[in-house]
Length: 468
Image (cartoon, rainbow, N blue to C red):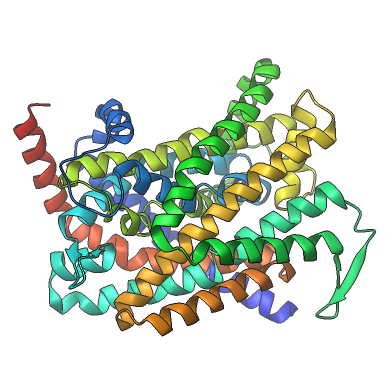
């Protein structure tokens, strides 16, 4: 097992090397320049479009429902466990690089949402089909269909073995264990290892609940997400605000630590050592940022393509708000809470880092703080499981066409992966997720660069027509 774990880590380091980081950031910077920092200039319009549906358009769900479906897949363990993992392994500076990635990622997400509507299609049954595979095939041309197939393949693997199942259920069961059985006093032997009974029970319950909802498909997922996602985001953000407001005098020092750590400005770090710190900080920050907000990953456009609108730019503005909410708001608050509490320097791992930050930061008994975090994490991760099942099925349908029996079989395999997730190590789970995220991003980012001219033209035409 140690050999496999080390191999996975080495592959992760290769995939998330400097070239991929430069490619993803470079794509976001290029798009930002081509749309003239639209993500900053039109953020107010993005908020308005997010809350007011376009009744004149056609699609399967409202723009808000599509955003909530996308957020259900993005606001998850990446915001709670991912941030904690980033700052505990890459230093406080990883949060800075998360924010940088998110700023340019908003432009990337805007382009994804725009292209999803621009190049979506309808099947013979009237179902809306869209996402990176369709803007690659219909936008770049049929000769690039192999690239679309590559994206779809990595999308299936990403949902099945990475961001959709293992990381989410692992995060939920770890939080439940930390609350109910922190010292693992009640254990059961599974796969030749001892696991807390709480982990086993939580794993079975979440697997069962996920199976119930997944049978309903996109409309049931989006209906569930519209109610649960906004409520949990508000609960979590309010909890983080309480921590920040009760430690407001410590925020300047935390910000200073984040910035200095981001650039390796430490007395003991210079030359190669300093560069290594910056590289690690940027690698973990950008990787976890993309894991959290999925800008450039190509998953959100699959949900965006189902929105009831005929205006690609309008949906692009709505889509980019997902990155703003996910990273600029939620991840920033999580990271500041962790840095203020110093929990990232205590040798803790995964969700334990955030639990410690909440327990020390909230003016409540430790049990209450841990319970709040456990509930938020459980709901965030559960909705991510549901959202990524939809993404994975759309990728599978593109690869092989829609077949009812294949679809049903995949759902059972997906549910089985959820069931297995609690028994994998935290490090292995996150390394695997990073690998599939990176591989999935490659064909999507290539398409965004190739179609950046379309994004610019559609943007200019829309605002010239509307007079904005």
